[in-house]
Amino acid sequence: MSAAVKIAKWVQKKPLILIRFDEAMSESFQNLQHGFELLTLVKPHSVLLAIKLPTLCLLEMQEGDSTKCYMATATKKAAVSTFESRLTIKKLRALNPNSLQSIEALLTDSRMKRLLGKRLPAQGAITSLSPKLSVRLVELLAADSDNQSALDTALSLLPRLRRVTNTFWAQEDAIKSAMAAFGIRGSAIPDQVTLKKGASSGLGLIGAHLFEDNVVHSDSLRFPGFDAISADVTGRAVFQRADERLVIYTANKLPLEQMLGVDLIYINETRGNIVMLQYKMLEEDKQESENRDWLFRPDKQLRDEIARMRLPDFDGSLSDYRLSRNPFFFKFVKRKIVDDTHQSFLVSLDHLNQILAAPEARGPKGGVRLSYKALDGTYLREADMLSLIRSGYIGTHKAETAALATIIQEAARGSKALVLAWQQKVQETA
Image 1 (cartoon, rainbow, N blue to C red):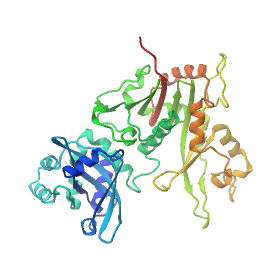
Image 2: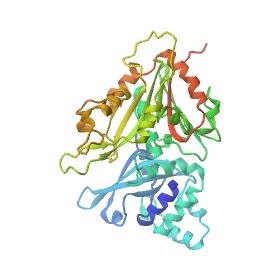
Image 3: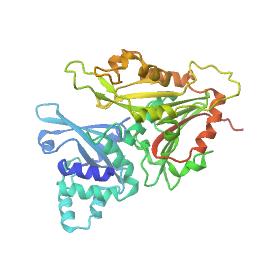
Image 4: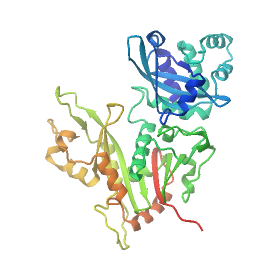
């Protein structure tokens, strides 16, 4: 089911809201550092009373002599005084067309057009729409492929529709991990972003607002050195820091999950190491009433993935140091979202194999399971893992990393989304 279909069903019960900034609000907004990621508005209780949250909102603001329209997600409202409530809005993403009037012009049904005309907000105001009108606007906006990123982002913030198995959430988490390993914040603005027209990419979910002069929409994307998989690449972002460059690619239908059993490949050319992650979901153990544990029960899919996690034999010399040359790691993530984050832990492939063979991994009924209690703190935290990747202390040796490029090139078919983060040393030019 597409993002547009899921959102259309959602707004039938929680209709769209429309927001229009006046000139003063628009000017103040442009001076906010992270306004495109998190925005709050304070209005009288009566203005927000009829709004059902969370839901999508269409927001128009003035930019110079023109206007710009954004899709965002209104997530919650809370009383902040006797007379006023605060509305929280997250992740504003640019829409086409660029004004509420232009969106109204897309309607061909005269009744729908008349109803929307009556509901268009005055400057500085907020209004809500009917369920049918909300569904129709979602359908119209979804018809433009340039709005796909905005729809994907909005979908990622809607509860129950946002599941950790969702491709875009997994890509977002992998992208943030790559950025953190490179030593840059998740709110950093890429120097350049290229998104394939009509395709969905987790790059639409990251960091600060992707200003239009940094974003290029392309019919195709090239993956230097790996022409065979260029057709499946959906997005590319470039971050520059001093003499290093981080290039992140998102892609669909690559064979690397099938061949190597992984979701994220981090290639650090500066240190010459490759680290690969596979995501797994932890389910809440509802059988325990107090201090509930989070469990993962190994299945055939896990066994198949582990069987694929093998590197080819390497006969060359290895001169650089590694704490562990095995690049394969598992990231176990709580399916439930806590404080807008997914709590997780990481273990190496070697450690996982040891855990699965240990008697302590057996549950009350004899089944094998992995859990917080069973590990008793013996695992890697996110920050631990990122430090090891950044320093080059774990992962393949430089010579092995170079050899793996050939494998990636030859594995140019597949069926699962993957994020490839490529950290490079910038070559000086004369």
